[in-house]
Image 1 (cartoon, rainbow, N blue to C red):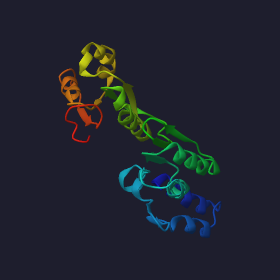
Image 2 (cartoon, helix red, strand yellow; image 1 turned 60 degrees about the vertical axis):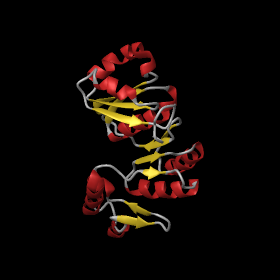
Image 3 (cartoon, helix red, strand yellow; image 1 turned 45 degrees about the horizontal axis):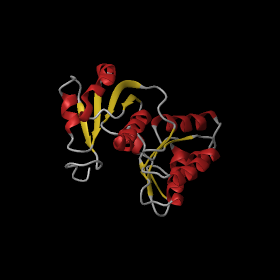
Image 4 (tube, rainbow, N blue to C red; image 1 turned 135 degrees about the vertical axis):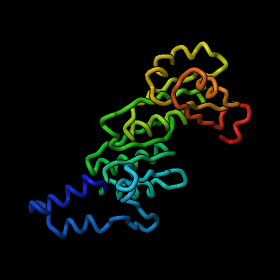
Length: 214
């Protein structure tokens, strides 16, 4: 539930297009909704500008479906992480009932509904190796959902620095850089010496070396 949604409800009541009882039924779930096994934070968007993120790992398809359904009724946007193809199938069925479409980032297990239409700024995401792509794609999906332009350049680890040439223009046009790497994490230091943008280093638990569990 965000400001525009609340204003729409109030204006509908004012114009006589929505009954007071119907508006009350919608607003009574603010700021949260108890669905038995979860407390849905409908005020998250009002407080922080983005809806509550659903962490799917450890939840059943039925759990995620119920949470997603409750959130879609009041907000219309979803960001779900660590989801399986089965969870995506369940969420898609809920979305169809509300005439919405879910997008599934298969490698990272991210599901989004109603990504931000207008993108601002640009964030470059550099991925050291193919095994790091799931983490890099989660960053890409999250940025797209939140309204940032994002570009992913894969497999440019320090074992072959010549491969970084293809990322030159991407780094130049970006406002920030996310570097995803396993192993000993050398790539973020290299990128930090190549550009004047903020560099966010994201370690992963793939590869050899001292990842310390990611």
